[in-house]
Amino acid sequence: MTSTDLRVGVVGAGLMGADHIARITKRISGAVVSAVIEPDEGRGTAALQNAPGAQWFTSIEDAIAANAVDAVVIATPGKFHEPVLLPALAAKLPILCEKPLTADSASSLRVVEAEMAASDRPLIQLGFMRRFDAEYARLREIIASGEAGELLALRAVHRNPDVPETYTQDMLINDSVVHELDVIPWLAGSEIRSIEIKYMRRNPNSPERLREPILVLLELENGILVDVEMNVSIKFGYQVATEAVFSNGLARIGQANGLQTWSDGAFAKEEHRSFVTRFAAAYDVQIQRWVDAVARGTIDGPDAFHGYRVALACEAGVKAFDGGIVEVQQVERPAFYDKA
Image 1: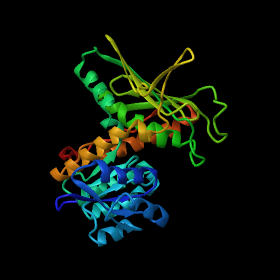
Image 2: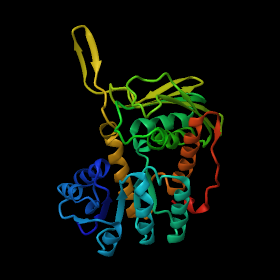
Image 3: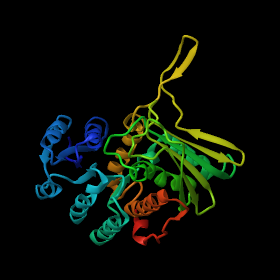
Image 4: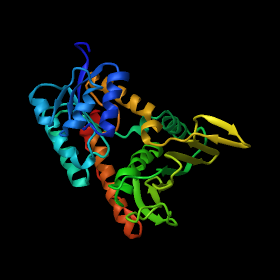
């Protein structure tokens, strides 16, 4: 640690928080984990093993009062984000908040209003890590440049081997498809106009509480159509992939690229088992760019107002479970967010 390192408090020491703590300690320059903020003592103590010199706090308020942090990374479940975001904003701390911004659009709007009241510039960067994945970035360049012609459609898949017992039907949208609701408009340069859900033939591996896999159909404001297969009981591995259909060709990202084996007349490639490995490099780039942006007094990624828009799209998606095409509420972007 140097006197110029950004002192980062990581809120939440579960899977995502522990991963960020190790990342900042081992692979990020210009920052150090100075505080682990976690009400569970066991998780907090375990996380400290990857954060030499860090202090443990049970609340963000205690960490702020102790002047222990210059910035915060929020890695708790989405329903706990607002109670952390509001005091952090009041303290004018730069924030990297894992998706979603909050659990619903009403609380997301409260956060947006609190941010605009607390500061003269955006303080919150949202952790939609796909934007920092090299393949997604290259696909966006191809679309924007027109090198393959006009973009006609996008096809995406989001597949999990399985999900925990705490995973509910609404989480198909709010916890999983939420990534597509962020990255698709970013790729295509257009907001989502409407959402429709079709139910595929049920997977016998699906838990009784879930009706899946589903096909999510999106229409964008620019007329681009998108289909997203959301499938959380497919067993073989974790797969996130996208195909772009252009007037002059195709582009695909997310194909398996690990170890290749040839044995007994068969060819095989390794596939990821979780998001932690699939997007490891993207998480590294995201955190490094956030740290660098904080040093410049700005953010370098999706902002809180974008998180509010995604929350509105998620609510439309959940409503679409009941059938029909559901329009996504459109909201005007405040000029405040052009300062980022």
